[in-house]
Picture (cartoon, helix red, strand yellow):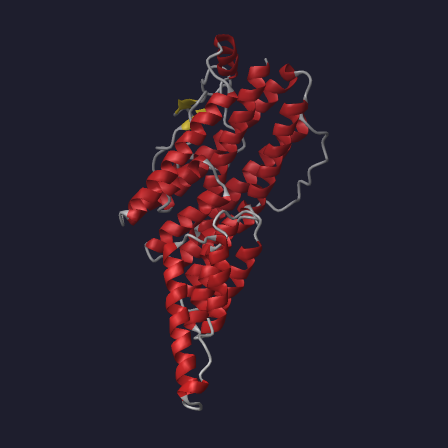
Length: 373
């Protein structure tokens, strides 16, 4: 039974990541976001979610039924509900009490996810990755039974078959029996599932970097998007932004950096990359603001980057002494950075020549001071 709890927690994370991808596509596609049917579908999900939680986990009335039900609000509420549900899974002393309600909620979300995914697929260029299959089963049936997958009467979702050309997106569902079978056979555990998912994530990121180094930028973007589909985090969001910048899609790149910052305000590379994109567009002062924020970020392995980029920005402003100061700070953090060392030496030489040239106009050779840098 303990293994069931671990598996159930994993499946909650699975549906959470899938719904995140769907809502991200809806929110980012302005033409979709403002369509009435999208808001009706979002409102329907909101009502079903509130009804389920009130009926199974919390007493009725704790959820504000008049709260906004637009896609952004429902996405935020859904994250909170899944976090709450996962907390119940972790602390409840009698797992059998929670199994049914949790599986029911997961399947309720997959029920709504099919319609959202189909609508996005029919009306936008987004390609949304399916959830990790794991213990899930797939059905094209109009509804499912939690244990058998057989069709059931329609839920409160608002869309009809006529709303779509055809249902090409499958319905995923988690049979309660799958958890029992997994536990009985001891063929799965949360650690092995998470380990495999983490390994796949790192493989996608590594391949994305390799493709970028070989100037295969579209391929790099595809790999980073696959990584994002496995785990929505500041790192994967920033990498998708970076790949878009390589394709010169500056606004898309900047938007993903902002998403990464919202996801994890301590993640330094997102601030640094955003500053870099602004600098590439000639917005020097604005870029320096973001580089300064990157310097203060708690999570940043290559802490020299924002100092190097601030130096670049100051060079563009012809503030060479200030730029040299930034480069020297970067060198203290990365003393073996070959290109940075060369840049600093070239800049020092150039500054010394300019200073000496200026002094020569007012002094004799014997009066000249030694090099300044």
